[in-house]
Length: 266
Image (cartoon, rainbow, N blue to C red; front, side):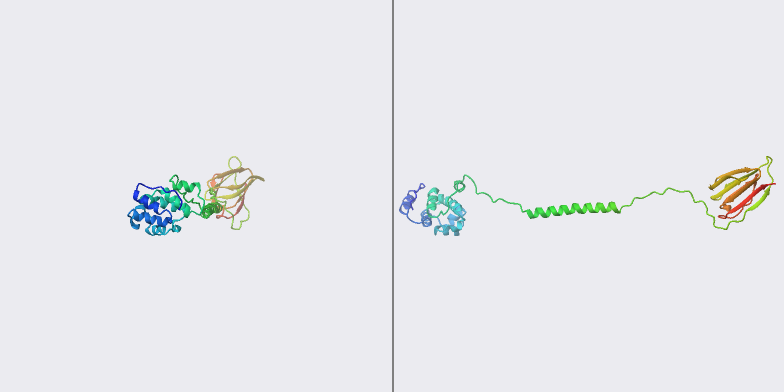
């Protein structure tokens, strides 16, 4: 052991160390501890180092210290408790046990200039990938649901009220019936057709001329006049009331019955 020794203010221990400079570091530490009057348990309690690890160190076994950096740290912690300068122990350790080149960072750690680097935590890509897939699936599912809802929705068409249909004749039409009528004071026949009970199609021809052909709706009435003859077609005779020259005529047929009739002047 050739390192230069640095001692604390303990003359007795100084003499002790000078007499044992050729002993191994572990044995040197045990002798210094005993000279300082400390047991292993007392040293462990004051340094917070496990008693078992102190026993290994005193056997000159630093394997369980966790490497050179931690071993030197333990020596720095032990040194003031046994009244030995910490640099003396570090120098002795480096001569006997250091097997790797000391980096600048190790020396800074040993001298409390910096701290041991913390393990850098890295994020795993797997949880991020799974989360991304779940989010994308949820978005796609929402779009499909919205699309299906729009496809399945059918517009509601409002129905506007329509007029009741014109009655379609179902009964067999009666043959054309002719009636002779006296004209009024003006010398003409005057005919009024009123749809009092329902709708009907009518066709009116006067003296060979078409006066009207089409539907007449319930509540409406139409009047016609001619000097010689008026021929009529009624699609639903039972829904119509006729007045000829101011006199009401009896119904010419039943509902939905077609009637053809001709009125001629005398």
